[in-house]
Image (cartoon, rainbow, N blue to C red; front, side, top):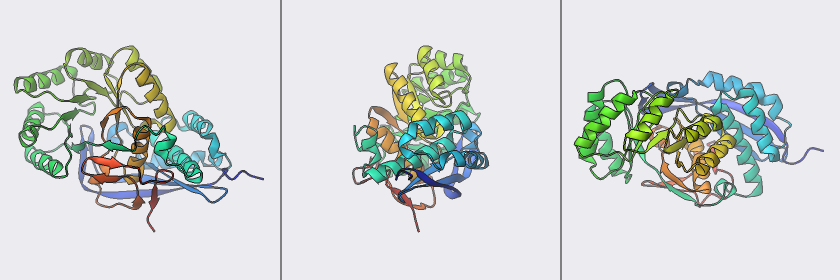
Length: 360
């Protein structure tokens, strides 16, 4: 007789969510979140839900590729025991390791079902260090005028930390946008995110100009391409600003290299890059190496963002929190999730799992 925690069925469907406006980064813009919803059912009827949020402009992953990966491993997931979640994650890493969003969706659904059945919220499962976080909000690529308007709106929401997407190819435009944002929000800590679109020399020039203007960013996130290790090392050593690795920190092995080469000060952990279990390994490596922690995501709905909030709050020690994309979506197809008041994201009302379910 099968255990109650045996995975009886795994389903996947497209989850297309329109955005209020295009979400632009250095590599391109996205007008529609082309995500996937995974539904997993245990033998006792307990269901768990996961989300894949591939972002082609970030790492080339697509909805079609993630869907194919999930369908490919379905026969090996169905019949497995959810209690063996690390073994399931190891199988996913071995078989579809290059499709992190698919791994994330399945692992999230497994852990959601397991902790729902146990009556345990996921932030407790991850360690219970906290049940609340304070997020920033992003200003995507665009015009100077749009950046100023966005900064006012962010302050109006009660959010104090502003993340600015830069690196679209025009240094003067980047400087003008940063200046306009600072004029509107002079006391707001600024995170500058290049998404791999700038060279180290250009980044140093940008920071030098900002320094003359009396502006020091709180964090410089992945200015150079993912494979520009020398550029990252150079900026970490000489920029005078904490440097976060994102695209360069896509796996536990890459974070181990970042730590060994002292090529970053902070690691941006995104469950969507490598799945939940490898993200746990990345967190352990970063902590052991004395690197700071940041939690972020792709263009994700309330489901995936809430999962990341459980992860970071439960583990604790995340100095930078970038869980803002539900605010960019024109629709919310889910019930539940974190409660947001200004910048504060609260999880203490969630009784089991991640607390998010599809509407209807």
